[in-house]
Length: 331
Image (cartoon, rainbow, N blue to C red; front, side):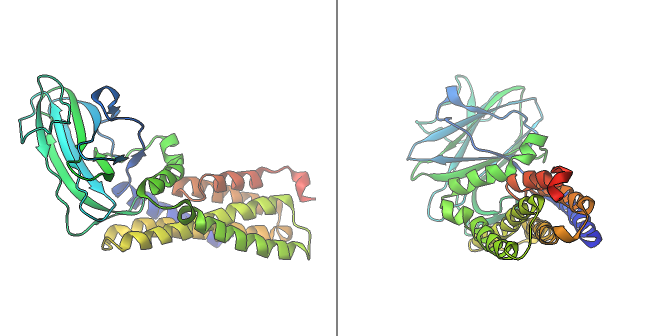
């Protein structure tokens, strides 16, 4: 157990060092096809990754952000799909120098000038380690706000539609709720990307089926305490997270070359697999150990899961439940 705790400690330190270089707060917005329904970017400094889909030629999606003179005005647009889809970016606001011609179907506030940046598809996709996912970056815009005021950002397609990501801001900062819910947001991102529910959930289902089958065979030979059953499911969900992350890395590498930041999802996968293996082993041997040792390990596993986004939230919750079950359940 001591070695498992030491390994978890080292991996968490490594994760906290490298993750800020790659993390964006994910956003999956609702309707934002008019200026009136534009999505407001709450904090212009925070790094957001907004995932949405343009469905037809001429369609535009709108976002607004309040800036002061000299604030960074930095946005990029990318798409995960192959083909010719190349979304544009239009930025309008006080003091913006007119650049290009605003498409007829894009709305701009009265009196504002706009910079129009056509989308150009690169030959090779970038590897985004946070999700992980491969993305073709079609626009990369960087400037400073020329005046105080509200700026309108429109993502537009002159031709075919498709999914896109709008990246904004530079400061990697999460609220506790945003951090904890990342695994749920990632499921939404996978669906946005076009992946099937079976591909997304397959690793979890496969690991759960194999693990529960093994545990049921063991249960025929000896009594298994309730805490161990719960701890086992938690551990299997952690293992499923690790397998799912490795699968998504493989999918992304089909389009994008691996760079140094590939270490981010690899560390996340290693943490999930390590924590899952520790939880499964502790659950299988729970009857031979003291309740205190088992509970401490499950508490550590739960914390690791929340920090490293392993177990799709359910895993860490079950680990905490296994650790906090009443003493009489051990009898």
